[in-house]
Image (tube, rainbow, N blue to C red; front, top):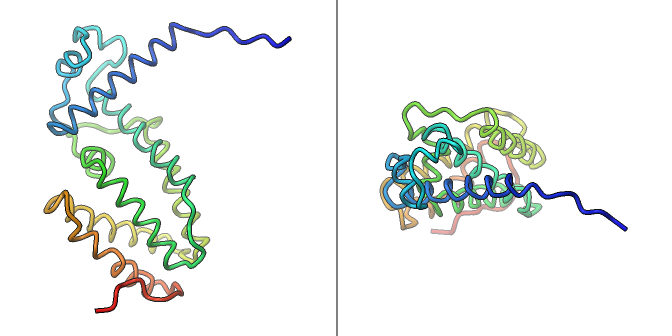
Length: 203
């Protein structure tokens, strides 16, 4: 007969409370912006006194840190589940489209992960670790497609980041810059010598 391990119910409750705090912080950030996240506002949202938050997070930046790590962990999990077409040029487009979809689905999350939007906030090594895994997996995937130079991978990130910044800054709910993605990936693919038919729509 197997014996189930003893559950640490206190640890489970503590983790559930931490998750509730992080969820509340995301709700505030999405509603009012990342800068609006305060210990007082988070505590009020979950029915907790502000001093009680310090038993879970010792500062507002610690909450941002948990948000940062959570978001990159989610993106990493999505990357691992994603299936790419065999044709290299189209595979790069799918990678870019996935990053765009993830980013545009949550502007506050994109700002926290990619724009250094919080003065004085630097993620901890633990929170930063999944983003390092994301970059490693991206570079490994690109090498498999024929993009072997790190500078070329950097160029792809810069092109996608530029389009995303324009989209979020000027037309958050639209697709004016999103529609440019096939053209931009074609230009990138031409530059680095990726084979395959053109991705852009004929004019």
